[in-house]
Image (tube, rainbow, N blue to C red; front, side, top):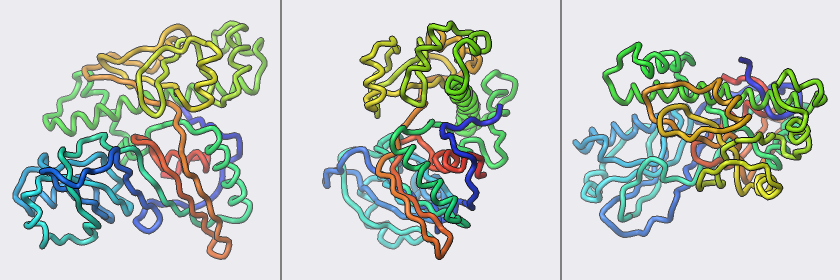
Length: 357
């Protein structure tokens, strides 16, 4: 299936490649560090180095296991990133002589617990687009206004699928027992890639349905979408660009409990106010399933696999969006903040309305 996009403009021509000069990420912690406790908290800047490579280098230097070092999330390798890591403060003195190319410890403090996966509020991005002409810049301005107003689809980025973009193929085989993988971390990574692949297909289908709803009459869509005219009319009357369907599973935003969309005006108001958002399925055991019409669509992207499933926001809201066009340099600089688990490259692809990898 071809990728569908949420914005209506034609594709925008510009050059983008992830690099430490043009792609900068700063992690936003989930909570304020107390300044005391047995855990040393380091704020680290790294360039062209993955989080796991950074952790391994520090662990080797200290002679400890990687798992003794805590981090909230994996940051891009081909970028300049700033993130927090934690380790026992007994290693503080030994770290004074730690030196690794392209790594700098910016600050340190203390806390009473280890940083764990998910302990972040989001990430702040600085990105530079090149070979941008005035016409493209004006279209980027408008695209950013639309994203700032309405949000964007929460696709998994190309990073999720490996260098060749095909990790999900092995992931499916492993998840169904057709292939063995002894390394538990690689096994989980590949299965997650398969779950992410199905999620992206489902989300693209939902965006396709949005496009059809906006461009055709209900009578023309009844047989095509296998929905009643009554349901289609309800979808057409929705003001939000992402159309909620009977049986969708919603979640309080930016975090909270799951619940079923019941089609009341109250839910529409909360969705428009960003108090709640719609979720998509990451297939597997224990995952909550959609119902009614939403399930009819979702089941085509579900699979019975030996892995834990969950749900993920299908629609998210970037904040603090800023854009600046430098005509002399033919460059466009943008800053924005995304919630955890969302990909900056997906926002860039939404603007470009094409793949950038």
